[in-house]
Amino acid sequence: MKPSSQLLLDRCFAALTAQNSDFQRGHFVAAEILAEHFPGDREVYSRLLSALPAVRNGPLLFVRPQLAVALCLGWPDSEVIDDLYRQELERRGATGDYQAFFEVRLSRYPTGELPIRLREHLIASEVQGNPYVSRSLARATVRRLARDESAASALMSALVAKPDETSKASVPRVLAAARGLSPDLTAYCVWEIEEQLKFESPELGFDLISAEIRGVHVSLLDALNAPARAAALQSENY
Image (cartoon, rainbow, N blue to C red; front, top):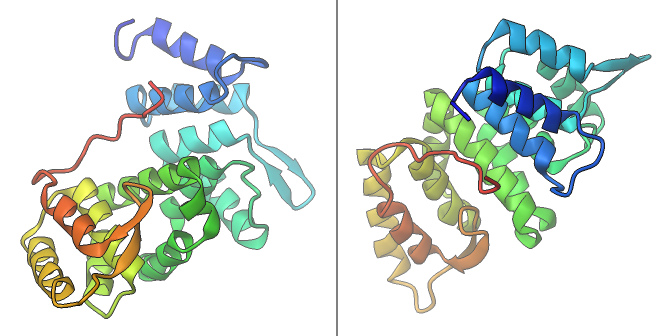
C-alpha cells in the first residue's frame, strides 16, 4: 500500500473498528499508522469521531482507547483529549488502557509538573514489572520531549538537581532518544559516570528504555551512544 493512500486509510479504519481480531493490539497499531500518515487532516478527524464516537453519560466521557491514541498522536490539539485528560486526573484509569493512559497524560502534563509526574510513573510497580507498560510510558515520554523543547529543558534542569537513581538511569536515555545528545546532556552523562565510578558499588536504577534495573553508569553509557538527533518512533508492533 502507498503511504497516505485511500487504501491505507480504509484499511486503518477497518482495523480500528474491527470487533474481533487475531492481533490483540491491532486497533492501536492502526491508530498509530493513521496518525503517522494523516496527521492534522480534518476530514480524517471527522471520520474518526464518526466511526469511534466519544460518548457522554452525565459528567463522564467514554472514549475508546484506540481513538485516544490516534488523537494524541495525529490531532494533539483535539478538545476530546483535553476533556479526557481532565477526567483522567479525577478518575485514574478512565482511558481504559495503559498506552492511552500514558499518551493522554504525557501529552497534557504542564511543563513544570512533568519531572515529578514522570518520576511517579517511573517508580510505579506496574511500569517496572511489565514491559508493555514501560514501553508505553517510554514512547509517550519520547513523543512529548521530541515536540516540546520546554519539557526537555525542564527534565534536564531536574536532572542536575539531585535526582534519584532511577531518574539518573532513565531521564538521560529518554532525552537522548527524543532529541539526540545535546552538549549539556553529554556533559551531565560524563560527569555522572565519573561520580558513579567513585562508589564501591555503583548505584542501581530502573532504565525506562531498556525496561530493567541496571547500573546507572551503564544506562548513561548507553545514552552517550545515542545519535545526535531524535530517534524514530516506529511501533514495535509493525
